[in-house]
Structure formats: structure tokens, C-alpha cells
Image (cartoon, rainbow, N blue to C red; front, side, top):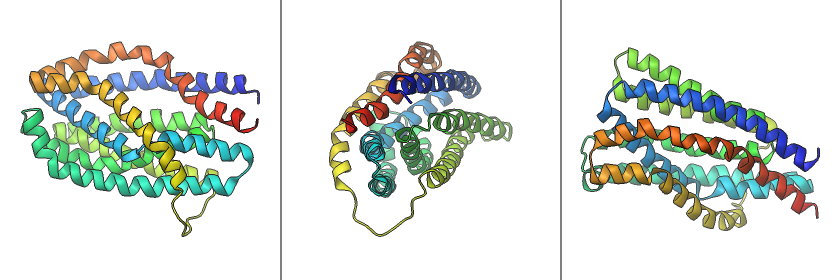
Length: 287
């Protein structure tokens, strides 16, 4: 297929998926905002912290891996692409567990010293269980992107995750679990997405686990990308972090009810950004 047609088709699918995801996330935010301003603020800061931890756990492999897999795929070097996939999954699995352990140790200090909110400590400690599954699911979804399985990537990474999260949240809130139920729903949705996405890439790539050395080249390439990824995530949540630091948890809750409207503009940018990378990598590799 012509590269421009690939970009156009992929962008349309991603845009449709993101539009539906925005609606699902709006409903999700409405549901959890009913628990109260403080509870919503605690959830927002807890999830923001976990998202920063996840980006650290990925060490840029969700970006660098796309480049190398696309490159080897275009050259017909299937075994090298599979080696990159195995290396990514192994590294992220180990790093995410280490980061989760460190976050558990420092959860109380983060809550009390930075956010001045002791009630955030159990929220962070509960969210930690989502970290390895969140990080690994992001790697699996990036592999789908590298192979340009855009439709499946959108269905699993956006729609299925969003629907699972909101359905489980409603069920657990109705059962009386409140904020703990919301976090548990998020954890279960990430577990579901990881299992589904991992099962899909195993069928898609048909690779087998073998004893081999880590592909350090992709790691060295990805680490600088981690720095930019961390900067982007911090920029995304900096406002919530600052409100939590200088004001209080209820103000964080109020702010995070309003801010999603402004983020609607990113719906028009992300589709091109995602599909452009693997397609351009293929074109460059063939020259």
C-alpha cells in the first residue's frame, strides 16, 4: 500500500477510536466525580503518579522498539524483530516490578511531604499493583503499532480498556467499594488488556521464548527517548501536581473535572503522530 494511503487509513481508524474513547472517559470521569471532590482528587493524583512511574518503567522502549521492529520488518528480518520484542517484554517486566517496589517504599513520603495528604498513601499503594500490567500492555500495544495493526491496537488499547474500566467501576461502586472500587477496576482493566494484547501479539508474530541475550542496542537507543517521554507526562500532569502541592486535594478534584475539555484538541493530533512513525521508518529502511 502507498505510504500516504497507509497514513491516511491509519489516522482515520485512530481518530474514530479516540473519539469514542473520549466519550467513554468522559462518562468514567462523571461516574467517579459522583464520589466527591476529595475522592476524585485522590484518584487523579494517584493515577498521575502511576503514569509517571509507568513511563519510567518503559525506559523509552515503547517508542524505540517501534523504530527497530518496523525497520527489521521492512527488511524481512523476522528473527531480529522477534528478538527486539522479547527483549522489550523482559526488560519492562523487570523494571516495572522494581519501580513498583520503590514506589511502595516511598508512597508515604510522596503523599505527606510533597502533596501534604496522608490519605493518598493507601491510594498509591493500591495503584502500584496496576503498574507492571500497565507498562507491559503499553509495550504490547506499541508492538501492534510497529506491525501497523492499527484497528486491533485501537480496539484493545483504547476501546476495550475504556469499556472494561467503566463497567467494572460501576459494578464495584454499586457494591459499595467507592474509591477503592474505582482503583480496583483500573487494575483489573489493565490486567485484562495485558492478557488480551499479549495473546494477540503471540499469534500475530508467532515468536517463541528462547534463551538469548538482551538486545542492548534498542535499549541504548530508547533511553534518551525516555527522558522526553517523562517530560511530556510531567507536563501533562504538572498542573494537577502543583495544585496538589500548593492547594488541597479537593481543588485537584475540581480541576480534573474541567480539564478534559481542553484536552479534546489532542484528538486531532495524535492519530497522525502514531501512524506516521512506523510508516516513515519503513520508507527510510528501504532506501
